[in-house]
Image 1 (cartoon, rainbow, N blue to C red):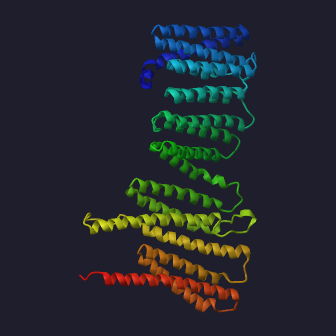
Image 2 (tube, rainbow, N blue to C red; image 1 turned 90 degrees about the horizontal axis):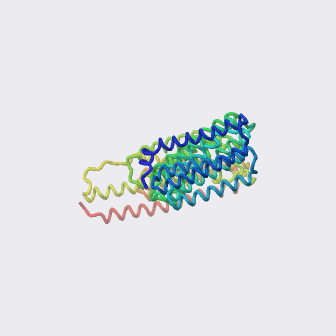
Length: 543
């Protein structure tokens, strides 16, 4: 069988002409009925007879080796039968159960015959006629639920054919004609609520999103062409109508956009698990979904009566996007893009530093405050973890570059990373900010008066100095060791001249003792480090 491009070039005018002829016949019957020249029973009889005649005649011509013409005629006949059944639903000659059984039976029989004999043009023309029939009839008396069910049956059949036979023209025809039908009946049938038309357009969106995802199985693990394009068209169409419908009732449009973003993200995840070779589709869906969610996602928090909680959501979403960018660049060795991601990370961090201090606490499980398990704290932790993980990668790359220079594999190498130290410092600041903020909130929400919070700050600053000291030792960064030393000196001055002043209490004694323990731990690490440095100087050969 010829490919879709050649078929389109050869036969699109013929198919379009057949569709117009089919429409004129339907319109003739509609005209005759509207002017009471014929009754509904006569129209049904003529419709079924004409449809069957076209099908039989088309199949006879098909057997005489004029395959395309035969399939077109048979397809027109099939569309005529669908139109007749639709007409019986409009005029209530048949009840809905009979109509639905007839539609399902005809669809199954047609699908089986077309599948076994590869009747591609017949399938396209027949199902196109089936979708085009309600557009011509345009009956205001249509049961809208029946119409939507009918359209969904035809669409599912067309997507199934594409799935099993790779007939890629079918989803294009289905989407175009379904869109036309929706426009037509939205204008014809007036509703007094928003959820009825919205639920229908949502149904179509979910059907196409699901169907186009499943079509990947028959495309050699590729989702990079037509289906990807149709998926975006489907989302754009749903977004347009959702905006139009909901704006008529002064509703928030961002919720449908959030739905689209979640569908894109879910599609990306499913594709990455099932078809990991579909890189373009996976990254396209993921990036589109996350960016769309970041742009309109503030409304996810609108139902929460929590002051400034939107800052948490914004920082989390954009930090996630940047983190995914880091993962992509590292895995693909796209180091030239890393400085831009570094700058983006720093911008989001500065944004968080500006707005993080006035976010209302979330009361988990009826408690006033749980340290480190509340939205702002989790964002602080998120910044610290992402920044330190990225910094660790940079340090590893620097060690590789140094070893290459020493072994003369690289003779002229410039430092390729220069912003990572700022990210490292910012991440460590995030840890400090996290510790200070959580302790201050704990004292504030539980009204602790037995011990002054300033004394607890000494312990926290000592722990923070320990973190800096360990980081400096592990990655040979003297700057952080120096900062830790300065913090320790400041804490010692604070404890001796300020914390020990005023009234005495057992809590104050215990807190100062804990501060001393932290100093001892840091001193132990410093002792070990100095021994290692001394040993390395002794073992080094004289030059």
